[in-house]
Length: 159
Ligand SMILES: [Zn+2]
Image (cartoon, rainbow, N blue to C red; front, side, top):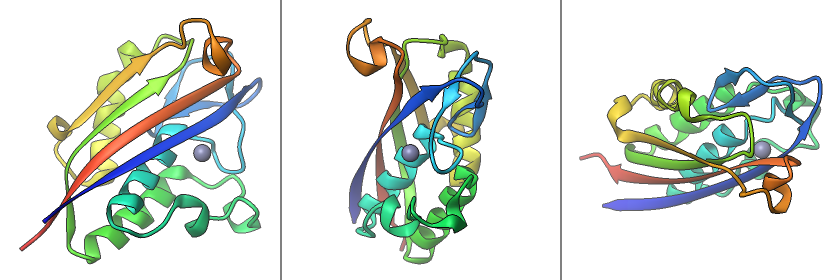
C-alpha cells in the first residue's frame, strides 16, 4: 500500500535571523521570520509526511500559539513526526521538493540540503530530490518578501 502526501509553507524574510532551509544554514544577509526557527522546507516536509499518513497537519501537532514551540528546532519537530509515521508502519519511498527564493542562489546547497533531509528521514540521499526556483521577480517570492517550499512524499506500508 502506498500513500502520497503534499506539503507547502511560506515564511516572511527578515533581517537579523539565520536562513535555515532543510536543516542547513544558508549564508545570507536575511533570514526567515516565524514562531519556530522558520525552516520552511522542513515544515513542508513535516506536513507532507503527516498528510500521507493521514495524521493532520503541523499546526495541530505543534501549535504556533504554544510557548512550548517558540524558537523550536524544526529538525526536532520533523524527527517527532518521522517517529510517529514509522511506528505506524510507513517508510519513505521518495521525497521531491521545490524551494522558491529570489535569492540567495540555492543551487550550490541542494546536495547538502538533500543529505541533511535524508539523514533526518532515515533514508538514502538518492531518494531525496531538491529543486530550487526563483519567483521571476514577481509576487512575494520574486520581490524577496518571502521564501516558500513545496514537498511531495510517497510512503509505503512495510510488510
Ligand atoms: Zn513554517
